[in-house]
Length: 341
Image (cartoon, rainbow, N blue to C red):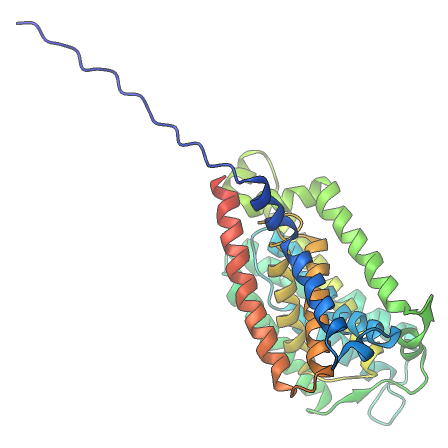
């Protein structure tokens, strides 16, 4: 009896559908288009046009986003590697509280020179990231739980130092003058934060370390296979995040002129919103610096415009909450498309 050999089976290769040029364009630049549309609305709207087209309103829009943008740049390092750091807001808050307490000239303060009172918290801040990195890389703890616990710890220490009160920087001190000094019509902090954003962009996109973080974020096992030192790079990302977050705390103290333990929560959620929205612009599916800048402008313009329209303060929290949910949803969708394609 003869038998017939079964026909060879061929594996079916599924080729991902390439997005159309219009879809690709919208994925990259939709956030910019929305931002320009929102600006145009508030400029043309009779109730806000007169206020919105002044240099003062431009300064308001930019200064309102600077501290949160620094927090976003801080969080972007561990986020690019696929990990979370929810302690950056509390790090910023404890830095501002620590600096304010050191430079305070009253009986409750230490009366240190401004430069030293600012430098010490920034120099000490990497300890926070080192501790986070130790628990995540060596103890293999969940980064969400670890950094959230660190955030609560820092908040408690800040409450201890302030006694629940707001600490003020000395009137007319150098740190306050720094925030109010203008160059070419714009506050000096705008240029300082822009310079930091350029440095972060270069590190993340033009250095082996930055590219390794994106590789880890795409696939940590694959990153290990190609020789990337995942634990070391992740540890560094937490340390860098703490330093940048401490700079946000210093800037917060300079702009507001005072500090309190509760400032960290607002900075964290705004910064995280910037980070997630960054993945919906310029480089869809990846957390990126210029996407975060555009997201900061969009949210700051929207909140400033709503304020000019006379809406109550609660609308800011509602708007930021909706923006955060939308940002997470869009970045998750684009990240999934990136992995599939």
